[in-house]
Length: 436
Image (cartoon, rainbow, N blue to C red; front, side, top):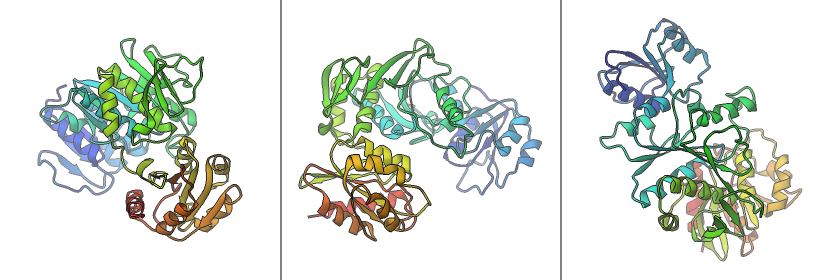
């Protein structure tokens, strides 16, 4: 791709915007970065910076190409003002794809994308195929393209926001993990959100492969589909199946979940999807099994901290909403003692009582929402409200029988006691490690 002498407007000065700007500069463009807020950091002198930009500026701008960052609403007034006077309007993902020559494994879904992205990268690297996790997780794709020696392949996490602005983007292998309502502050309907995510398949042909759950309706897709499922069905047409803690491939046991650091049905699905994709990309199955033994999942996502007195302690601090908490509960294979709580965001937790009663033997609630949450949860399981996270861990230990799991999945944000879900998860990890 060449942009010699062309004018390019980059919308957004975050990591994606900066990577896109530097790539366009290398390609010979005259680059201006526009951001509605301040712009910080040391930038190349050849890039013009325009902080506090407005839609009015956009209407007066005439650019050969506009590149929008995924955090900026594509249909919003700001982006559309720049689009009106442009010769082209794409996202950072599309720009990076146009300039990358390796194999692309793209991963999308409402939940599980980051873990699956890391798994794909680990499996390919273990098999001697250089790979980097990037995109919505890790480095922006444009930043990877800027490397002196880009990897042979990429495990590319893609969001609906990134897919809104593709034109030619076409992965060699696409993983469709799952779909559930999300980002309804950006999309008018659930159908609109799904349509944005489905664009991952838009340009794929019979030469490419799709990895998807057996329940997903992809009948209109031209590419071959490799299926996986987490609930055993003797008549299911799926190459990868999960039953009684074992992952099967083509009807033969492949790996036990207990031999990995990953837990839960959802992580079994992540392993199956990543295995199918990596094998399709050329990874050796034995190398994949070796990689799983040492794989360390991204922190704060059902992260196994330790096993003490026969009880597993899982850190799912990333669960900052009801959907994430529900998914974590549904995925558990052992009896659960749930630790939940944090900032009171005015959410209705009553719909969770069904799955809580099915999966949990007890719960502990803490933080600003602790008392009110205890009133809801106590209708189905024994519940202890406490004030702090440390008190919650100690209470959960008392309540957890051998063979159970203490699941720390707060279901709300951390801002009553912590600065972020990361700080909250780190605190949980340290408390659990200090248990005697």
